[in-house]
Image (cartoon, rainbow, N blue to C red):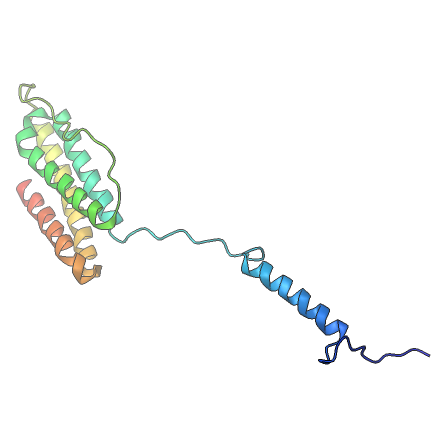
Length: 169
């Protein structure tokens, strides 16, 4: 005859099965808690919403620097605008905690360089003006989406870009 009743291990009423099942459950719970069974990879931190504005400021400064190198006669007109974009980039980087790429400042050509032709200079200025207009729209959109503590800086950048576009007229 086979006995199928529960065998009690102690006076508390716990069976061997219950004790073993509890120990197995604790083992699995401790493994799950350490991330062993965690299938979800850690999500990378999302970039700051102002990162595109920072990237654009750096790109505009570089575009002005290239224009000054290729059209040295425009240096006095374009260098202050490039410097503005570098200042915007520095402030944005400070705000979002980004590191700016190292540059040696303005790469403007010397003042004694050969002056550029009027047609090439006009084309360069028109290209820069179009870039400023597009960048100004980006900055306005960023300003509208920015929280209050960031809106003043982003609005100032948008206004500066609009002023640059007018200065390149």
